[in-house]
Amino acid sequence: MERESSCFLENGAEFEKVCASVRSGYSLLVLGEVGTGINDFAHALYETLLGEFSTAIAIYKGSLKNFFKAIAFQLGISTENEEGKQLTVDLLKEEIAVNCSEETLLILPEAKRLTTSIRYWLEDLMSMGVTLVCLAAANPGKDIFLEMSEVELELPSDGQIREVMEDEAKKAGLNLTNSQLAALQPLAGRNQMLARKVIRNEKHGLNKMPEHTQYVVIMPVIIAALFAFAVVRFIGMGTGNKGLYITGGVALVSAMALKQLGGVRGARKRLGG
Image (cartoon, rainbow, N blue to C red):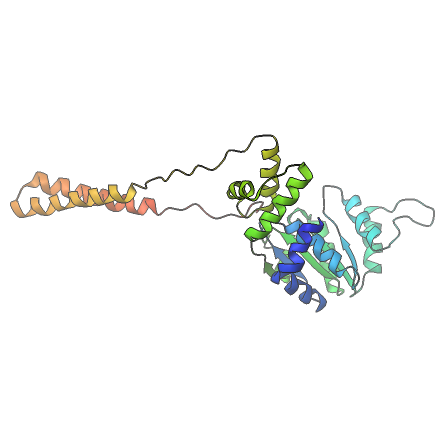
C-alpha cells in the first residue's frame, strides 16, 4: 500500500488537483479504470487529508449497518445508545449526520455500489456542507453524482507499473532481473492489478510470454486487388461487354463494403462501468 500511495504523492498531478479542490470545499467524482490504482488513490487521499479534516473512508459491501458503523467509528461517533445497545441503521444515519460538519470528509471508493438510500443520505450531508469524494470506473450519471465536479485519472506510467511489479516480486520471493521484468511488462499493460497478477503467474509458471512474430495485415492487399477488378468494369463499358461490366461493378461495390466493415469498432466501455 505504501509504495502505491507514494506513486500518487510523488507523480500525480491529478492527486494534487483533487487535494486542492477538497480543501476548497468541493465534492468530487474521481474516475479511473478498474485495476489502475483507483483504490490506492483513495487511500493515499485519506492518509494525506486525515490531519486536515474529520475523515472517513468506507466501501459498501452489502451490509448497510457495517457501512455506517465503519463511518461512525472513524469519525469517533458512538454506535451504541445509552443502554449499551447497538444503534439501528436509521439511528446510525441520524447520529452521523448530527455530528458531521463542513470539516467532515467522506471518501467512498467503488461508488457505483452505493444504494439509493445511501445516496439520498449523502445528498443531505452535501447540503450541510460535508465534502464527498466518490471514486468509480464510470460516472453513474444520476442524483448526487451529477452535482459533483468530475476528475479523470490518467493511466499509470510505465515506471509506476514497473515499481508495482518489483514490489510484488519481492513479496512473492522472486529475484527477477531488469530484463525479465521488461519481458513481463507487456503482459501487464498500464494496469496495476494485471501487473501484480503477472508476477503471481510468473511465480507459478503460468505466464504466456508475448510472441514477437511480425504479422502481415493483408486487408489492404485484398481491397487493392478488388479495386483492380473495378478496372474490368470500365473495360466492359468501353467494349460493350456486359459480362465484364457487371463483374467489375460487383467487385467495386464489394471493395467499398469491405472497406467500411474494416472500420467497425466496438463501443468503448470502462472496466467495471
